[in-house]
Image (cartoon, rainbow, N blue to C red; front, top):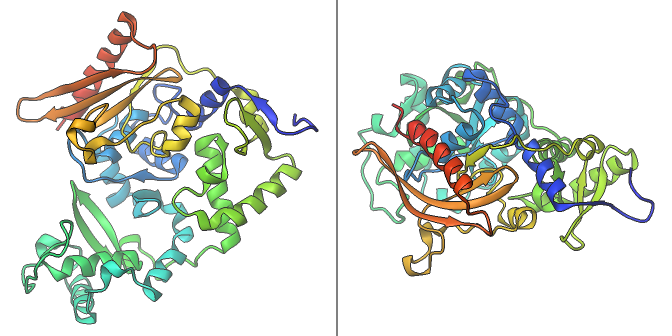
Length: 384
């Protein structure tokens, strides 16, 4: 398939469709229904980002709803707290990650033990001993269960006056405790071995296996990959990943591709993905979170879709283009609009703060289809 003169030329629409198929945004219910669909979605995508912003539904629920039309918030709680098929840890951000991939994160946990982040500099050995002792003696705890702390002044807006909160966070990053359940943004912690029923943590994956994991995760969820997209959030993996890619190209497991209009940036895909080049289902509309895996890598999004998404919650109001919490609207294989939405839970309705068409997408038919998607999205937002 690969030309002897260089990478295989690939038209931009084909590249978009391969990515959308890998993201499972080209079909209405690619993972089926129920709690098993949630597990399958997290395992396929590799991670689901968690975020605290609550202008509309929090992004971890939103991302799953975009791929599981009958998704219920209880399904994610079931996967985390009961089935324990997903757990929380840091990828490029705090995320839900498949438990089957746990051993790829053990090395990071050990690094946190040996070289703690400066954020945890205020955690004393006594603070850590206190929370670990209470967990051993009392079972799972949230920060609300700890009411005997000597309160301190906050030195950061995200900090807490309770020293135990930062101690629990430190124990979490070190792999000593797990987030056993999440209710909104309230986390319940438990000893990690007790939560999973393990005698000890799994052995950490080797560096080579971890590099292979990053590559395979990206190929599965992105379809067409670059070093930037594979190593998003940790560029130190690039040399090891490139070496693996070169080996797979020699074995013809990956094909170098030159995507139309992207210059010299290197991309690779499997021969099977290139041959499939599927068409998205006609009429499919997704209202995407700004933290969706399709959106979060902004440079890649602009490269494939010609759309520069800016998260404007931290942009002064006078300088905003799309609005405070604009959501990209995927229609078929293009970004058709950006809608700044807000859920008014008291009034029981979804508010459109601003509607911005992208490119030449505006039409009566497009507006009708987006409005139908908004009705479904509103029902999801307001579901108990």
